Structures are given as structure tokens and as C-alpha cells.
Amino acid sequence: MLSARLREAGVVGAGGAGFPTWVKAKSQVEFLVVNGAECEPLIHKDAEIMRHFPREILAGAETMRQATGATRTKFGIKTKNHEARGALKAANHSPLVDWVELGDFYPSGDEYELVYTATGRLIPAAGIPLAVGCVVCNVETLYNVAEAEAGRPVTRKFVSIAGAVREPKSFWVPTGVTFRELIELAGGAATPDYAIFVSGLMMGTFCLDPDDVVTKTTAGLILLPSDHYMVGRRTRTQKEMNQIGKSACDQCSYCTEFCPRYLLGYDVQPHKVMRSLGFTASGEAHWNQWADLCCSCGLCTLYACPEDLYPKEACDDGKKYLRLAGIKYEQPRPVKVHPMKEYRRVPSAQLRKRLKVEEYERDTPFQDLDYRPARVRLKMKQHAGKPAAPVVREGDVVRLGQLTGDLPEADLGCPVHASIGGKVTRVTPDFVEITA
Ligand code: SF4
Ligand code: SF4
Image (cartoon, rainbow, N blue to C red; front, side):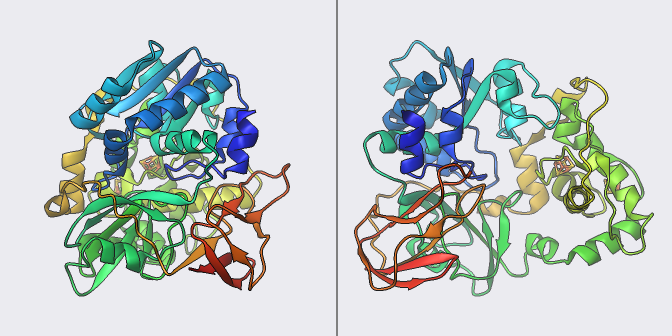
């Protein structure tokens, strides 16, 4: 059964969330929606993997389509990615694939957005694609499905390194290598002091530690000089963001008017979340139902707000307090697409301009590096759900692909495998270190 093979191979969503793919493979749906939208500014790794590995991606898609009983595969890809589209179409022999051509907007890869574009269906508020007969899989995840079918577990990651590096590029690396190694593989930093954005400027995480490591969900790195506008925006504390928001938000509501979830018809209204900050002493406990359906795309904070405030972070905080208060918001009205939706889409070029990263927009061509690190550190939590627990001990000798972390089958999660052969040199509840 495919689901069991995917679990055994540790396949999780490679697009960012890391949801275990074996769970998706158990569902029965009408459409398999393939996410090749890739909309994070400067990251082009999905375009590269589609261009260079179209057969594997299509084989993985067909395997998932058959397992889920889907009648059609809806393949979402941006029209601007001509070479990737051409490679996929040339490699495709299935009459069951529909090509869904997407404009170059942010965030066209959001599941709610993609399902609507591909099928015309609106996922119920707070629901999942399954509720409208769809399963959504990222292109690299489908590559890993094909690998799992060939008996190979997930031990490497396709990444793109962009921004202030000498040779922006995309390549495979074993999971568990450090960001420092990735930067060296991209020719080194092109600036002495830099900050690292992991997996994207909009939805990724901010990192100042080059010794952090690649997981199954790392899309790549973007380096920016330490004095860049984006670094300044990401280094404020939540308290500072709340205080500035309280005093400076003029309730213009641009954040709501540009919010992609609001425009799709969901009750997300970040300006009301910002307003709620004013009713608290320090931004504490400002739970707010208008935050609950926010997907944290970051557009309100980094594009829409003319005052450079932090509505996305206020929504994240609001969601946290909603959870703590045990409140589950239910949208009282039906989801209905806003009549202005198509006219308020944000072109990627405009977004890059607003983020002040136009000068870093470059191709990240694929290079077959066959990188062999001296050491890897495999995190036990590389996926949504529960972390794995180490199943090896210090001193053990392991081979490439051997199981190093696992969890009970009933739990949501995925096993972790050795990404190089070697000796286990350190084991903690959080990671397993292997030295080649
Ligand atoms: S766009 Fe900015 S200033 Fe306007 S309501 Fe939203 S947070 Fe306030
Ligand atoms: S981050 Fe802002 S723009 Fe994005 S979904 Fe949430 S509220 Fe809307």
C-alpha cells in the first residue's frame, strides 16, 4: 500500500509545512492538485526541479493520483516558467493531466488560492482541501514519492541559495548539512555581514546562526546584508511591534483590502486585529476572531501597510491567544469571493520592489554537485506532528538510508533516515549526528 511505503520512506511535504504525505495518500478524492506555483520572492528551486526532473515528478503524481482515486491531475505552474513547463509537457504521456497556468502573483501557491484557481472550489473556512475533493502536493514531494516507490527514503533536499551570494544556484544536498556549507557551495557570501532568511522572505524564518541545518522542508536560503531594510523589519520583538502598532495604526484597512484570504471570501480582517491591540495594556492576550483564518502569507505587513506596521505578526499573536483561550472561530457567513479579488492581486515584481530586493532577482541554475559532507546533524522534528525519537546509539555505524529516528505508527509524524553513511557521534532527543 502506497501510504505505508511513503511513511517508511519518511516522505513529507517538501513545500514548507512538512505534513506527512502518507496521510494524504490514504484519502480518496476527485482531483490531485500539483503545486508548482512557487511564489516566494528570489527562490526558484521548484522551477529548477521541474525543469531537470520532470519524469520523476510526473511519475510521483501518477502514483498519488492512482492511490487517491483522483480522476484528474491539475498541475499548477506559472506561465513565466517556460522551460519547466516545456520539460513537463514533453515528458507527460498521461491524458489525465490538466495544466493550470498561473500568473506571476504572490501568493499563488497558497493551498486555498491554488485549489480555487485549479478547480473553482472554495475550501470551507478553517477546512482542508479534502473537504472539496482535493489533495494538494508540492512538486518536490512528488519527486520523493517516486523515490519511495523505488525503495529510496528521503535523505536529501533540493535547495536554492539566493540573495547576497557570489554564485546563486540550486542543488541537492544531504539533509543535516549546515547553512554555512550551503553558502560555501554557492560561492560564499557577497557581503561581510549578512542575515539568513530560511525558505523565503515572506513566510520563511529569520536566522542568524549559519550552523543551523537543512531539513526535509528547507526550500533554500536567501542572504541579505545585515543593514538591509528586510533585516530591520524582521528583528523587532513582538512587544515592540505591538507597541508601534498600537500608537501608529490609522485603521486605513489597506492590510485587509489586500489580504488574499479576505479577497477569497474568508473572515480575515487584520485591521480589526490591529485595532484590538489598542484595547490591551501591552498587546497581551489580544485574541481576535478576525485572525483565525489568516495563512501568515505576510502580504499585509510587508506589502500593504503604508506605515510599515506588523498586522501579520498581530494575527499570529491573536491566533496564539485564541488557541490558549480554547476558542475556535467559526465563520458565520458563506465563503464568497470578493468582486475586486482579481484586481488586487500583487505582481511578484511589485512585491520585490516593495521588499527592496530587485537587485537580487537572479536565476538559480541547477548544478549536480554530489556534495559529500564530513558530518550531518539530523533533526528529529522535520515534519508536522510529533517528533521522531532516535533509534540509534552513539558509536553505532550506519549506512546511507538507515533508520535513525522513528515514532509509533499511530502518531502523526514521519521517520528520519541517515543522509550519509558513517558513525553516530552524538545522540540527543532533538538530533542524531553522523560523522562520515
Ligand atoms: S494597513 Fe497598516 S495602518 Fe492601515 S489598518 Fe492595516 S496596520 Fe493599520
Ligand atoms: S498574513 Fe496578512 S495578508 Fe496574509 S492572510 Fe494573514 S492577514 Fe491576510
